[in-house]
Length: 248
Image (cartoon, rainbow, N blue to C red):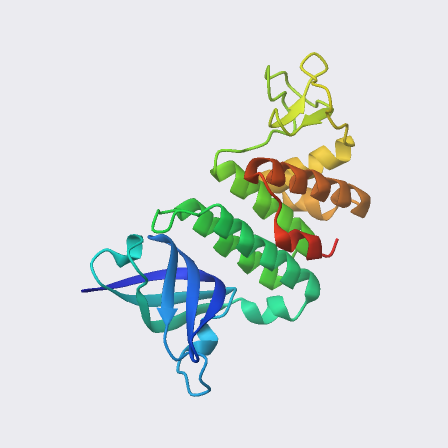
């Protein structure tokens, strides 16, 4: 029997019995973890409100043997709030739907429980912090998170140089299968031809150039969001359920 401590983001919760919940978290050191929180649905629970989606928490787990890597479910025995991102996020529909899509994406990219995913964890923490602050449009923060999540999981897209031959950009044709923009010689059937401003926006979101991203017109933002959603669906092999509710 062992005690483990880690910090993580609450991805989702499920009811268990009359008063308990199963909490799914993305943690810094143990990747995605599912744990049982006993009695948190009771009104007198000491830490029930801390284990809600979007919460950044410090959690102590009680496990038998190697439960944290898949053999059964550990217990959440102690929870301390690091940052309550949920408050400002759930108060705004645009932020809430974008944040929900982020949580689902993070869970989909960490399907192997107990496998460390530090980069994905850090991306999620930073994205929720930015989303909660309201410094940038919710749709921009979401698209930046999706592009970077794809990149750290081996599916990075290119929006300037040709994804096949490396010809310096700007290049105009975009292919999901090829992994980004293509030059005229490498163009494949079915390639999209987004506007140059859209490709510039996506490159800015991927690199963290918020000055360029914030100044982009809404029509290019909408086109960029469509490309990001299609690219994500291509690599996940199915779409995100929460994306259909995202306010564009």
